[in-house]
Amino acid sequence: MLLDVRPHSRLRGDRAVDLNAAVLPVLDAVTASDVDLSRVRVVADWVQYRDSFRGVVQSRRIGHATPDTGGPPPPEPLGVREDDLEIAVDLRRSGSVEAGELHRLTAAALTAADDDVPLEDWGPGSRSCVWDFNALYWSALELWEKSTGRGYEQALPGGESDARNAEAARELILELFGMWDRLAAAQALPDELYVLEIGVGNGGQAKVFLDEFARLDQERGSEYYSRLHYLMCDYSAHVLELARDAVAEHAEQVSSFTLDATRPCTALGFLEYKIFLVYVSNVYDNLPTDEVAHLGGRTYQVEIRANFASAEAAELAASVGIGIDRLPGIVHRLLRLGPSLLADAMPDLFPDTGTAVEFWRRAWAAVRLDERYVPLAGLDTYDLGGETDLGGELLRPLLESGADVRMHVNNGALQSFVDSLRLLHPYGRLVCHDLFVTEIEGYRTHFRGPGKYDGSVVNWVNGPLLAHVGRRRGFDVRYERFRHRAGGGNIVTMTAQARD
Image (cartoon, rainbow, N blue to C red):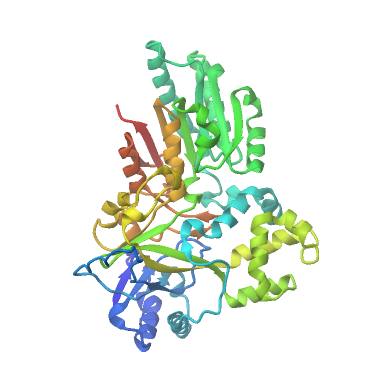
């Protein structure tokens, strides 16, 4: 049996995890079971999110069958570890669970009694219906906010986005001005100066940027403001409406577009090689992602299946007066129609939109994810980014970088990143503030999602993978801690710029 305790930083100090209380009852239950102890791994993480998709203890089956490719079976490698089962423990909660109950939860996970109510079949994480919940949140954000009584930014750590920081905006603008001055001196500066923001939120960042831009331009007498085209883009029409109101005084310099963040060129392809700054803040961590793992010398894809625990499914079904068997169908109808149209289509269950929104919120709170490891026949068969033609072989140096690792692919972020690079002027840059893992070792020591925000999903972003892809496309990619927030924080700034 392999025991992997990942949050090293929480094993010492005044608030150190009590491993005896948090893990020993789990190990007792495992050893008391009839599973083959030589083929079990116990993984203990600190799940820092207040809400997540995991239970205190969770089991994950590890597959071994290689998909039939029509040819001879691949040779069996020597020195691999043949695990059958992974037991995942959330140290944030397990230490506060009474030992007998923790033992019972582990025994239940080992028996894999399948009385949960599945919402979908097994599949890659990026195709899960949790991303339909995520999309619904952004498309019907106004209804969610009305129901909860608070704006979505209040769900962020600290209650607001780092994108609003005036000092960071000023620094970025002055760098732009310096570059434009040099191009102007060489008579190479275009008449129209494009800046693109993807994921504008409520317009706070756009307002800070435009206010500072206008002030600095007036101080310098450079007359760049009159040539500026600031493009605000977001998935949510409601968010864009708020953003337009926030920057009303700069309306002549602003255009807005509703678009899918993973494919900015779909709406903005006419600006290819013309944009001097693509600005992204807290977007990549909210885009669909798969996970892959390298365990015991083998490579796996993590498949997931959204479900409701049986007790929560019964409560949710009873709240609208239906049987549990009808629950998955109604949830998918909600995800397809949205709460307003659901109320119109099923007035016997949802007499008004508010009732449908309450059902939506309760369903989201109840969603959990089962997980399993499925062997990858070969990394070359895995498609990283849909339309980006990125092959899975790009993952090899990261997966085989040392000890066992499980990491995000961030498929949606990769698509957005690669598509955005196409828009950049040869002297342009992409600047992104987000939750980046900057070294693969970070996946071996900390839980990186998925977690739940209010109605949306959050995952950390695989910085080494984005950097690897960017460099292969001729861009220098660097990371640094966000410098303009008192007390630090987890936000990292990524900058991508074409090599000289």
